[in-house]
Amino acid sequence: MPTQHHHQAIVIGGSLAGLLTARVLAEQFDRVLIVDRDQLPVTPEPRRGVPQSVQPHVLFSKGYQILEELFPGIGKAMGAAGAIRFDWGRDFQYFQQGNWMPTTETETGVESYTCTRPLLESTIRQRVRQLPNVEFLTGQRVIGLSGDRNSIQGIKLRDGEEYSAQLVVDASGRSTQTPQWLQDLGCTPPTATVIDPQLGYATRRYRIPIELQPKGKIVLISQVPPNQPRLGYLAAVEQQEWIATLGGYGQDYPPIEEQGFLKFAQSLPDPTFHNAIAQAEPCSEIRAHRATANRLYHYEDIRLPDGLIAIGDSVCALCPVYGQGMTVSAMSAILLSRWLSQPKQQRSKVLNGANFQKQLAQSNAFPWSLATGFDSKFPTTKGAIAPNWAGKLFQGYADRLVALSQKDVDVHLQFLAMAHMLKSPTSLLNPRLMLKALF
Image (cartoon, rainbow, N blue to C red; front, side):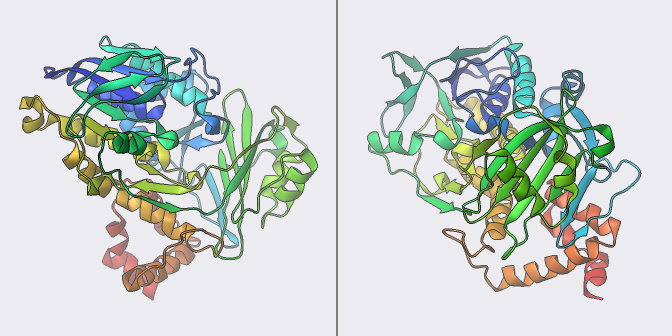
């Protein structure tokens, strides 16, 4: 590891964003303290501080690549714990606009693992616990920041204790209190943009007989705006189980009782999802989740006190239906590592996060526009944004590509690489692809 240049950093929140943040901070600080309000479990299990942990989570290929960069060999560790390796071009069955997207018979390199959120988080947490300069302070709630409007010196806990640090990182997710804490210190808090598709989930785990299992390892029957608000997501996970999730936009929420759940599944535009679970053995109760609004805090527009930054869902919380959240957090951690590695930051005794927040805003711009642009196509979405003329032009082109990708596997793979953040959106503008779409 590079020579450390600062004494102590504190990370508020021990979920995925917090763990990855601690990993990169460990290269630049003598001591990193992760503070979480939960007693973090040793084994993979849901916890109170992550109410959505029973819902499906999947790493995009870019996110998995970053995990391997930060924790070499973690894929094998996840596999040993029960996670299932799969290829998005071969093992992902995707039904959209009345057709199944084509798949390949061979691996495409756009790969990841499918598993439950507790298994993923537990595997990463075990690796972080092995870092000699990272410590956990669990069962403690942060109630404020110590310092003033110019400089943050640490955190305040509910029990009256205070911990000092040269850098405090808010990775507490959707429950973030940093805007209020800044206001309490006399700072101008960031404004927030909220776009709420009013999407609700219901999830249950099943054991599906082999003869009834779908062809792929992940099946998505997608919503289609503006008039088809329902979706179904089915994924193989550890312990030979499948996680089955139904969703509905505009408060068209799936029921959480068995017959209603099955009837909702039967209403999807393709029977694959319903056929798989209709005669399967339930392994859990049906659990609902409705905290799905897109919310973006504009930290890039305010004057931040020295010694404070925010990251992950604390800044950019995306509607989870698009599966971007964990990968966006991973990309944010890499951005933080690069920011801290700059000679100016290494020499400075005072860390001013304003430039980092501006870089983070640029990094978050594409996944934010992707999620909110699609959500805004539903007339029931609160705070929906209307695209400008350039957006409408690109959307028309993208619609042509989607129609083409249902017949052309190469176009579909181009879309996959872009959606998984392996390629820039501008990759869809290469002349060969444009000619295919237009003619």
